[in-house]
Image (cartoon, rainbow, N blue to C red):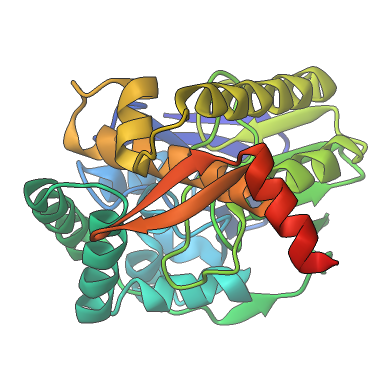
Length: 335
């Protein structure tokens, strides 16, 4: 379904098979030419819906001159390669997002990393196999693409009368970018700020230095400082009270961190064991994956803050709250 937001600015909702059931993409018009922000999922007739919606405003897929990607999750970039093939559009995204897209296309290496990471953090062999099958299915429906233009932080872009800024907001994914329109006072937020759910945070299996939680909290503070009256998200309704939503997200993650600390006691636990205590075990495969990821990124931050200790136990990494004795040993080593 296409909706006219203002002159030459449109919002299109496309289907997706996951729990949210939909994803939003946005369109700027300059005469006959279009700029598309995210592409939607390459499944379930999405391409035909996009084609029909653009036809209703007198344009077509071939009218698309530029594709701006917020991040390279399948529901946001899944049709980028297909649309580029049909239209010759230039694909713009951050360097980190472009690198992630290429890395996650390396099937053999990705499979090895998935096996290693999720086994280490407590998934059973069956859960790992199910996850690899899920990943393979997702990769098979992405229309392969490479970026043409690697955006720079705070780079200003122009499209006809429109001028906007690439705001780097890593957290939900490595390389996430929001697009800020200062004159109009709105932000295309991708999945950085959503109205009714908290964006899932996941590790980057190809970048061990990436800190999803601390990056996300820094990114939403950055958004809060922008002169934004409206946020147009990747899922859900338009947001107008940005400061309140940022506080809600901050409070959520503070509460989640405390909940994880409460789950850890004197007995070491794997990430999977902690995630089961918080989210339960009766989850679909994809939700088990999201739950473990969300738990891990909080454990990662707690470890870096010296609140907890990470140990090797057999083939698994386990976590335990640091004791006073641990702190005394740490101080003695420093001295």
